[in-house]
Length: 243
Image (cartoon, rainbow, N blue to C red; front, side):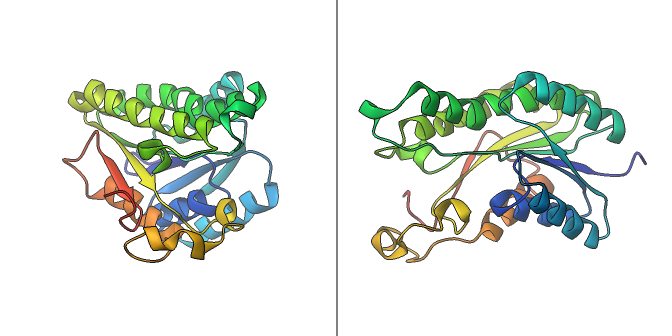
């Protein structure tokens, strides 16, 4: 790898917001490594799209909520590419249900995948970025982590936890040239929201529509490329939902 080659890692990058972020970074000139949990066909399609941008793309299958799997995969990625300039902690799932009926499995699965994963993945990446004395980490939170939501105690807790994680890392790593920010998407058109009745909640959105995955991806690119004096912030990309 050339010392000038920029490398981005995007978890949950096979589709939806993760795919959009991977492609936006590829278009910015980054070689992009994505993680995926199970949809090999979707991951392969994303890699193909990345490579069509004229950069290198690669997909690694591992469970971001499994510490041992993350450690093994990240060691391979870092050994192969030699550096990480941008990390997007995007992987996430939902297991919704009212708190009184929420099972341990629902709680644990969401917290491990949406919050603990950021710790597992960021840990080896931060060590590389500290040696580089540069890097950008972008954590995908949610408006639900800002204001809560009935039926999503697990998801809201995990996404709120990412905000605290973001602010703490920003304070610890700023002097090393590493910026850490979070994005809090609102209602974005993805597979996760495809069954929602848009008409039931757009009245609460000042812009009167759902967002696109590209809206999030463009914010990721801005924070990675142009946000040189921005760290520890939570950027709401929600059409004005949280004002």
